[in-house]
Image (cartoon, rainbow, N blue to C red; front, side, top):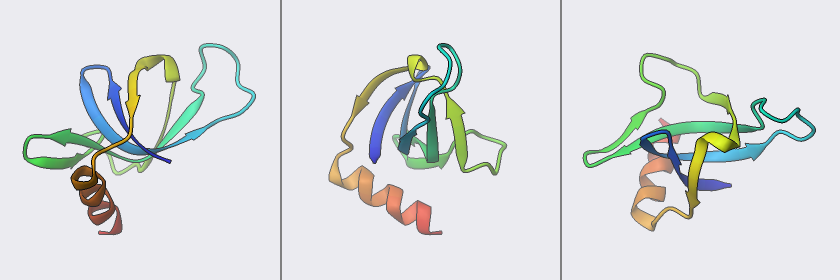
Length: 81
């Protein structure tokens, strides 16, 4: 499912998938095709990496919301490139 996330001090847009049955404190979700949302659009996240799937702890995500239509459209454009 596509979500807008507050992760550390950054806004990200990503497909989010739960990892079932993990120990407390371990990465328990996967961000697929994460992009940082900036005033100029979307940029690959994390910088300096070609990885498109990141395992993270959900406790590091402070807000989860539905992205607006414009941001979602940008995400799907970037993902298809």
